[in-house]
Image (cartoon, each protein chain N blue to C red):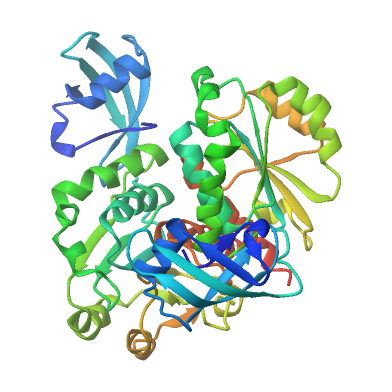
Length: 248
Length: 248
């Protein structure tokens, strides 16, 4: 936990009283004392700092902070993800890693090669996945929670939903092992927002690739190695970020 | 398992008899039948294909392959890793992900901020970590097992071992959050082999950074976000790979 995240409504005057795992972390891991200052942030708001004004160092842990915030909030990361629903254990890791790396929106949809049983995962409920997103933000010192949009049917998603969500992207990209393109050939000038689609284990089927391509997506490959989805998402995020920075 | 890996000594004439999890995978997941051809590879040797000549489709599973191999073996990946010993659960993931992404050698050493208890991890024994490396290779369709070298004392490692292992690298890099450099500023021409050092949770201490820098390492940062070691390794591998390909 490299930043303590709070909900806006937790602020009372200029004070915040923490009584949960955040208090425990401050007391047991960061070993704070009255007078110490810690990094805090309002979820989907600005970062700031909190001065410890009181604490209970034993269970039930309690830390009271006097808080102050920057005027501006962190920018939304310029990469969005579109995933064919992965296996829940993998999705959980993707949620926290994507939040840590920085993504704006995570679209999740169906695909031929998604196992039907994955759709019954409780992790698809916001109360289940939000803690994983927050963990990623706490790790990476960010406050912007990725938006998560889940669509359990591919056709309505790609025909009705996606077209309305595609404005503002400079690049619509789909990772596809057989493509002759690379990121270098598909991003040839400084990109704006990028939407990156990553398929299921086993890949998208041709029909799905065709539909993405009708929507304006460009396929690219990052080489011959076949990666698990969670590894691929992080590696691709790194590659996209590096490619972006090559123009700055 | 996107490739069936075998030890050289398993080949008898031009046949291989599989009786373990590989046989089960062929029978239960790939649903092979006599006459089918599957992708195989000799560990640290060439890839090839195996034709199913006989099988037992029930426990105890058994598959006999007639095998053939390419003349040349895959090249050693051009990126090596140097890690401060991570938490075992993280190291396990790094082993399989690094093998999947492709690394030549993984050096593991100590650092001030490595928890002492990590050194008692059974995972540091070859018989424990090798299966994780092989899993990564099976995923990524590679045969080259990363070499793993473990040194439990920092000073002897950096003074006596590392100098003898540094030939052949075009770049010695150390990821360090406070550096003003980026990969773009430290890799300005087509790189050869790269050795990438990634610190422990909490980072290298100044003394360690100084010693690396005396050894010829250049520090760089990939931004302000603080990442877990396993996420950082994969994201950095992606960035290095992208940066490398920008010169091709």
